[in-house]
Image 1 (tube, rainbow, N blue to C red):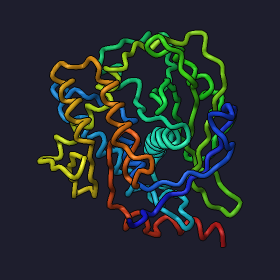
Image 2 (cartoon, rainbow, N blue to C red; image 1 turned 90 degrees about the horizontal axis):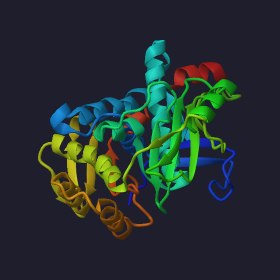
Image 3 (tube, rainbow, N blue to C red; image 1 turned 120 degrees about the vertical axis):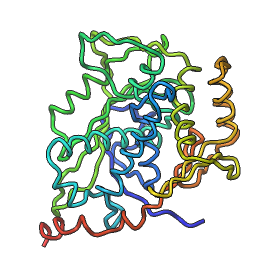
Length: 336
C-alpha cells in the first residue's frame, strides 16, 4: 500500500485528565483526506434534502475547497497557509480560521480522544427542531460520542495568529454551556483552537490548543438527544452526499460516489447505508445499537488512510496542490 503524504500538526493539551490525554504536547500526523472528512462532519448544513435541497452537499464542496486553495504541505509535513490565504481580507480570513478550527477539533477528537461521531449542535437541533433559549448567545459548537461510549462537548475556535489569554477564557466559558445530553452528563467538555503561531525561524505552521477545565456555566443547558436520532442525523448528510454524486457504485464493503471535478471520492459502508435508509423509512428504533454493532464488526483497528471510525471513506487527489510552493515566498524572505 502506497503511504499518503501526511500533514504534521503539533497540539498542546491543557488540564485534561492523564487517563484521557497521555501527552501534554504531541504531534498528529494525518493526510488531507482527514481534513475533508472533518470539514464535512462538523458542518452546520441541514440534512433534510426535501426541505433544503442538496444544501449539505454544496456547503461541503465550499468547505473542502478551502484545502487545495489555501493550505500547503511544507517540508516535514507542516501545514502552512498559501500566500493567497494571507492576502485575504479580514472577514475572509475569519471564515477560513473558523472552518479550520472546526476541522481540527474533529481531527483532534478522533485521533486523540477516540471520538467516533462528532456533529455540530445546530445541525442536530435543526434536524429535530430543538429550540434554544436566545437569552444566551454562548453555546458550544460540537458534540459527539466516543468509541467506547459516552458523550463529549467541544467548543471550536480558529485564529490566523496565535491564541491569547482572552480566547482561552472564551473557550473555557463556551465549552461548559451544555451540562447534559439526553439527560446524561458528558464525560468531558473541552475547547479546541486551531491557530498559526509565529516560530523563531519566521514560519507560521498550524498548531492546536485544547483545554479541558472542569467547570460548567451557571446557565448551561440540557441538550435533548436520543441516541437513535443522533445516529440518523449524523449519517443523513452522507446519504445526501452519495445521492448528489450521481450514480454510485459498490467498491468492496463501501457504497462510493466520485467527484472528479474536485478530486474527491466518498464512501460509506454498504451495511450502514442500508440501515440508515431503513431509518429514513420509519424504522429508527434500535438504529444506534445496529450501526455501532456494524462498525465494531467491519471497521478494522488498523484503518487505511482515508477510512474513519464512523465507517466512512474520503479519498482526495490533492497532492499536486498540496505540494505547490506558493506558500514559501513569505517564509524564505523572513528566514533569510
